[in-house]
Length: 546
Image (tube, rainbow, N blue to C red):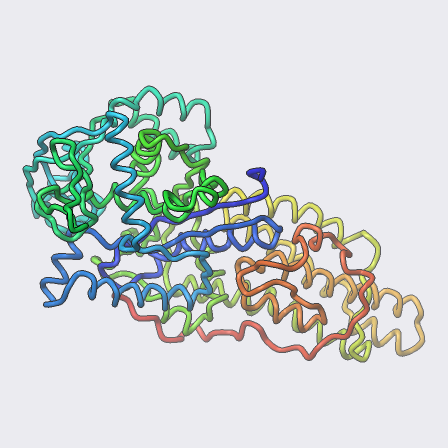
């Protein structure tokens, strides 16, 4: 199968140490949009997201609560799945690092690295962040509260000395530099690629891939002398330790593609077309991960997109800071479609963005309730009133048709380029053009003149409303990956079948259906206009923050 016939997209897997915030699921919504887009285009698509369950702080938190790590993560995984369902996220697999096939995959990756001569036993001493892992001396901050991780400033670091296994990352420096130079698309946006390339050129150090003395994690499969750590009864020798959480977590991407159990599936889906991750974990995904894959004889992913953070008054949204929005509460006010739209319209997908609940409500009211919602409602209401429910035919390729051709090209480029905020801005410029056509042509005035016998007014009325119906059809379809719940309802009001499954699979090839007049031969009747996005009063209660 050609790589263009399939599309494999993943997100980073979140720590299951707490309930999710909206900022945690931001990248998952973005990836879901791309997955839906490719499904609707007709590509065979696989979308993977999930949970990382093996960090030290999870074991510590479970002990504090008097429960087991597994029971603790089970409870939080349920919260993640509830939030993802509320946001209409439809992965093909929700992976957990406690899944049996992932345990096998992680242990096989270790064995392959050992067989390749790329791992060795050594000593490590340094700062350890319970929320992230070992930190290089150049990657910590000295604060009034002590030494801190820049990504988790409220978490106290631990000074650890351990006898661990290490991966020879330094051995892959030249290959990494060459890969970055030969594949400029590998890390995007470009300024993130330049940051990572600069880090590589600064010199790479080997990194620990095991933890000694930790019981919550995937058993390390090899003893220090190179023998198997598996005991005759099938259990694992605790003296071998566990696989370091970051090495374990990254491997989820190949587990989700079928490694090592399903060779046929893995040959189909790997390498991944796109990893969507946050900027704080860029090094792990763009430097450590390719080296891990090459060490195991596997290909690097084709592309890694590095997004920024959601900020609240200049500070990073985080559960530890308590300045985050609860996704279920946001959906309760804005709806799943509204929450998805405002998140990806208000927050740039290529850089940090300061947002607030008020900015979300303003965007929802302006774009969804007023611009698109009002266009759809008055188009259907006028067409019903003036043509007794019969859907007016789309007119010749002029006016809005020409604008649509240009809009669609820019929209596709920006959406597939992960610039979701720009893609939606482009699409809503067209919505604005359609609204301006209503104001310029005044169908109510044309209807009055038509009723008085003006044949030219009759012709113009049919042409204007036909074009407006077509504009609403096209915007509904194009925006469906962003608003998958509302799009089928919009099309039903326009008298069209949606044709796609709840996750975007099936149905006609989307790009064919997005041609102006693609359904011009289909006669039909309009349904009653119903508001898709009821206006929200600005004094609506703010969703609960942490």
